[in-house]
View 1 (tube, rainbow, N blue to C red):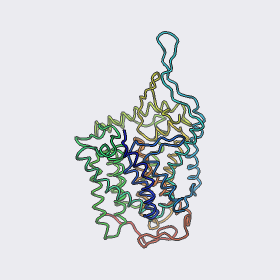
View 2: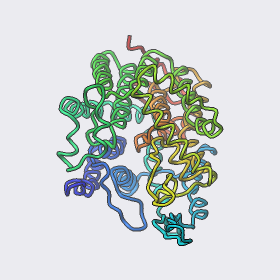
View 3: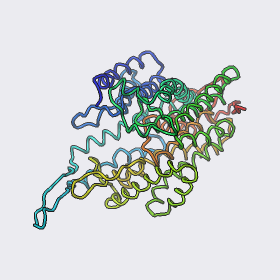
View 4: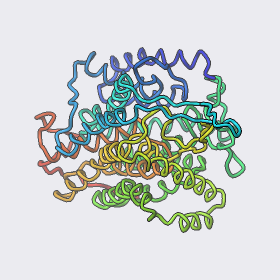
Length: 487
């Protein structure tokens, strides 16, 4: 149970956000309002207010960043992208909940037959969705999009993308200190500060040691955060001038060491695959890999529904690597299969909220499925319409960036764009197994989409030419900047 400090921190974050927006440049204020909130605010703790979504460590920073940007600083934030397909997907994401609410007005009732007599007792019930629920879920969809809209406008220039990667780098270095403490002494920081442990402690024990969690919802979230910070630091090191490159290379090596100590197989695999790619490969190869991963992520549920994913073969390969990892993966596949059967009853618009998408015992209503992957949660809750809207909005920026990169020389491409696309693609892959979609992911989505739109529609946001490191990099002005290898 969260203590008073946990709720006090949530109440104080609007004040912290106000200070950030008064003292920092706009790009940094947006980044640190959202990123620091994710790092420091308590997980699980929330304010359950009527008719609006729960106010927690995800929603409060997103709302404050958006409100202060347009209210305090009087900055414009376009609500719809310029690209027609992106605009359609944004509207679909916001309004896909309407048919979900309209088709789920009936309650889900759990009944018990009393002995041999034809007497039925209602043991539990999940309420149907009403019109007042529509406002709450639509507001929630809009709040989710706020970091995306902010990043598309203010973090999509090359300088803004550099600030985004630098924020990931500094945040990862700062978070490595409490992470090392928990790796050595066991995950206790959230308990000591906020008075509760946010997950199952047994899941933090791996390979005879501990996985850090600090203030994250789960150790896997922290591992993905360190992975993102590592990749961001490598990208900064590659693009840096000689004077700062050495420090950034050392920081990259240090963060990769922290990533190994996090003991997360998936995050480490992403690091092993993508760090050399960002350090050595040209932008076209980086975006091809990102596009491939995004395609896998968006088509996996379709293939899973058709039974075309060879789960047995995948488990056999996982068993050869680690019996423990194979058991965890098999458990995920079993729960996916149960929830797919549940989702198949309402495939187009889903079951809606209140846990109606979960598999439950028919008589008691007890939950017997534990969803892990984000995709199965979205698919079961909002159906194909909501799933395609969300995954389409996540993957479209990667596709648009790939098209723009292949239309122009590498010298006209920001060295920061494709690493952000790889961070997004890795997160989308991880979402197949874990619910790791967080506001920072939406910052990456908005940054990539905005940059692709800047290339496609010159002068979209401003008439002045964007500069960084003394070189013009926005198309159609070809800059002399070239990517440099770490080695």
